[in-house]
Amino acid sequence: MIRAANIGDINSIAYIISTAWQEAYRGVIDEDFLKNRTPEKVKHNLNNVLNNKTEDFYVYEEDGIVKGFIAGRINMDKYDSEVTRLYVGLEYQGRNIGTELLEYMKKYYKSRDCKNIIIWTIKNLKNNTFYVKNKGKVEEEKELEIGGKKYPGIGFLFIL
Image (cartoon, rainbow, N blue to C red; front, side, top):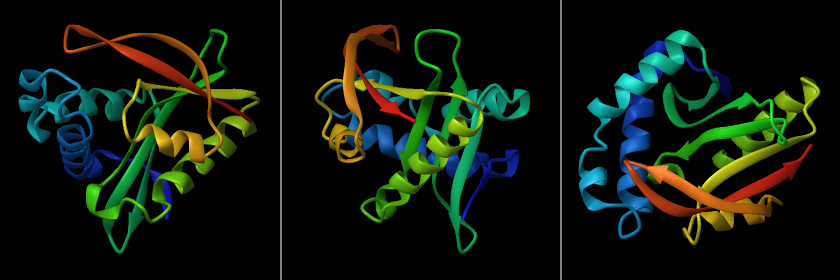
């Protein structure tokens, strides 16, 4: 079931983010940055996001376990909306959870009169096949700053 995230989900979300970064970004992102991407360090940022409601934040929960989540926001630039976070726990990947979360967010933003969603990610990550499989089109490229360093990024556009 997909539901709005709450502060009680923070430990599960932080764990998913930390382990996903350790796996997906190893060999791509600076190792020192990855070492410091622990659940404890991730929680601080999540507290701000969840308490201040700066992003629309939803979790995929099954049998009382948060297995994935998605977050986004409406933009005021050339892309109506943006998915800022989309993660599925490593042990739950390949079960269509990510697709369900993405479809949920697409419907949510379409209901708010958005015409498109952009998702920014690092170029050449193996996980980028997920966006292609879900009909995202590479719209543009730009540098993304992560941990004070710049990496080649791409934006996948989804028309709503």
